[in-house]
Image (cartoon, rainbow, N blue to C red; front, side, top):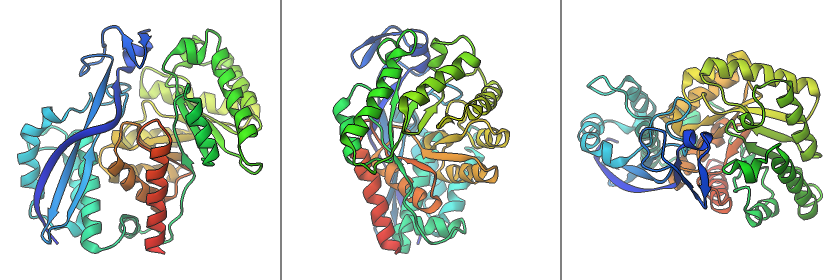
Length: 409
C-alpha cells in the first residue's frame, strides 16, 4: 500500500509553552500566567498557548493515518529546540514532505520514519516536533493498511514477544487541584500526581515546608480515601527547583530528600529532576552522586532524570553512567517515535529503569500512539497524557491500551 497524498491541519496542543528560564529567574506568578518579560528565544510572553500540526497520510485505498507534531511545555530549555509553531514551518514543510513521502510504500514505516534522521535537503535537521508527528502518522497508516493494531506492528519491527502488557500508569494533576488528586486516588492510579513547582513560594516554601506538607497531605489522603490494598507511588517533578533551597547538590540536599521520603511513608516516592546542572556532563555527575547517596540512606525514594536528557545519545550517556534511578523518555524531545524506542533499548542495555513519558503539551493522537509503544515495550512506568487534569489523559491511554490488548489477544 502506497501513500497517495499528504494533508496538514493546525490544531491545539494539550497545554502551554512555558518559559522555564524566566520562571527560574524569579518571574512573579499572576494566576496561571507570570509577570515579566520572556527570556527564552521563541517566546512572546512567559506562558503562551501551544499549537499542534496534524500530518495526514492518505493511502491508496482512501484510509487516512495521522500523527500530531508537538513539543514539550518547557520548550527551549536545557538543550531543547525553541517552541514549535506551525506557521513558521508550513511554507517549506508541505512541499518538502510531499516530495519525500507521496508514493512511498507504507509497509516499511520504520525505515521511512528513520530516514528523516538524515536531515533536510539543505542540510538542516528536521525539527523534532515534525519528526514526532510524522513517525506517528507512518505507524498509524501502516496499521490501517495492514489491518493490525499499532502495537502488533511494533512487536514485529523490533522482534518483541507478541504478548502485550499494560504498564503502570502515571497520571498528572496540579499541586493545588485537590479534587483532581482525589479523583486519581479513587481511580487507583499506579503513580501520581507528577505535580510541578510553578509557584515556589506556594508549592515549595522558603525552607521546603510547603512541599513537605503537600506530600504528607497526599499520603494521608490516600490512606483516608483509597482502598486498603491500594499502594501507589508518589511522584513529583522538581524541574531543578530544589536549587532554590540548597546552593549545591550536597549532603543538605540529600538530607532534604530523605525528609521527603519520610513524609511520603508508607508509600514509595519518586523525585524527578531535583537539581539542574548547567550542562549534560554536569548533570550526569550530579545524578551519579545523588543516586548513590540516596541508596545509601535506605529510603524508598527513586531519583529521576529529565532535563539535559533529550536525545538518544543523552540516554545512552546517562544510562551508562548510572546517573539516576530512572530516566524520563520525553518522547517529543527525541523526535521520531523510533528514537524513543531506541532510547528504551539503550536504557535496557545498561539496566536502567525508564518512564515512557512525554508532556502535558501533547495530543490525544500522540497519546494513543504512545500507548501502543507502551504495550509493546512494557516500561516500568508510563505517562498518561495529555494535559494536567488527570481524568481525560487516564481515559485516553488506559482505554487505548485495553483495546490494543483485546485486538492482539
